[in-house]
Length: 509
Image (cartoon, rainbow, N blue to C red; front, side, top):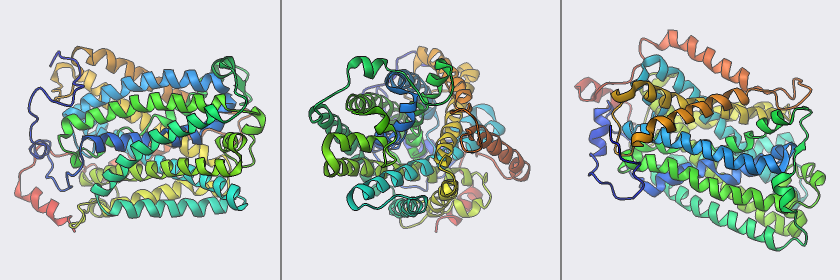
């Protein structure tokens, strides 16, 4: 194993191996279009993390679960630990740059069952993320329509907007990865400029600002629980939910040039850039709060919208909401791309019911069209309970976190267990691999337990945290389906036989 530190520069010390050749060595015939560059690969993870989606959507939750001090210090702490997870995952991604990403890594390092369960957890998290992102965008759209046109947001109208957003994202993804890459590149600058605009306006326009003592020291408990440590712990959900989805760089690796380096760098860069920009956004919002209780209980249903209204009035707030909504649209579109590639890859290895359909690729666009439709369709089903329960959206975000977070740690744990048997790729941590990896695994173990805990008291059917139920349900489903599909599920050891080539061609339509 190399003892050199991670490769941070854009120039590689050793010329990278041809990525199509590397993919064949990993067992797959290339069928997706490799039209994404390094910046585009970073951009998709940055867009999925989307600080203007996660931070804004769960800001109200953070105001109740610990308040300003937990939001700001929690962001810094969680971001640091997530950076450890991202670096450890990037190292394994460099060795196994495939669309299957996490489950393929787990399969190679631990065996078929490790790959199987990792894949199901990853898939649950990705589909939950689509539902959470796009439904959050629908909530912000409802707040905008209320401000501009007086349309009162209801569960039904929010669901209609949500379905329209899903259809938009499905359509955009059907045009191919080049359009997805262009939109993600625009998304990076939109997010950074949007954060600068919001923070700048909120720093200058309001006549009154909160003190630093309030922003970094005020603790607010609206959860019903008495233990402040417990409240602060569950308040970390805002940051941990936002810092998810960076595996998108790995899922798009079969469509990225020099993926063994670019996908690894994409993961790490997306995390640290989001870490810095997200802290600025949360600080800017919190300094600008005028009336804490009124903001938390805003008639718009979106506390950041109330901060904008208090600072700028209705028209100015509407303009800033449009900035946020556009960022959330970019985020959801990137997440559909990542999830659909996971569906395609998992089906390619015969892991899903109806795999023969979901692995089909359009000959014209080289896009997994059925996988795109399955991704948005299932996300729609996940959000349907929001029609009947106001707490269902919280359950969807919990499903995202509880599915995807453990899936990040499994390949890292297996890589640590493999020791020197693991053959690193061109981007690796060298002598820091084991300490970084163990910190990553430890953090994921803690937050997985943490986010299964009840978030409010008393615990009722409406206030219950359904993450633990979702986790048990997906593991049970995966176990049942294992006995059905274990005879056909497998990741190939090497590509090259005529039979395998014919099978791939059969599914390009």
